[in-house]
Image 1 (cartoon, rainbow, N blue to C red):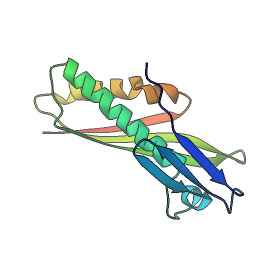
Image 2 (cartoon, helix red, strand yellow; image 1 turned 60 degrees about the horizontal axis):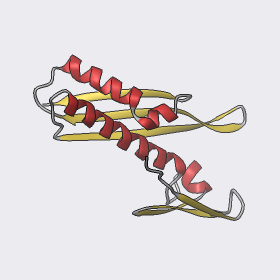
Image 3 (cartoon, rainbow, N blue to C red; image 1 turned 120 degrees about the vertical axis):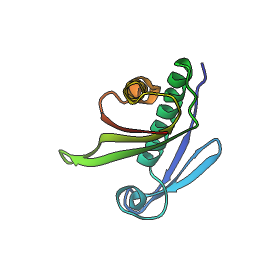
Image 4 (cartoon, helix red, strand yellow; image 1 turned 90 degrees about the horizontal axis):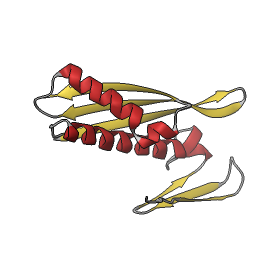
Length: 140
């Protein structure tokens, strides 16, 4: 199977340092300000949210395909919560929110497919220690 790689370089102290994350097709600056405040740049949690949203969307597309449906569009947002727990920062939960345009599916069938996608996408599997919620809307 494929092995995917990304790189992060950090220079300086936690509060005053800066870093860059890179992977194929993306490079983003990050800092304590972009991670814990609203300073410009990205952060590991945003990238994790994007990875989870992308993984879920692809898993759902595959489930739809196997069930004889085709998604016109799957629009998913991953909101990653980082909170201080016992004086340490922890990712405490991830909220997946998706809107799907695909015709001919009954709502209950769609909700079952969305639930299975959330449970079975590889990123969800890797994050089993984190609460993952799902809000799914079928647009017709």
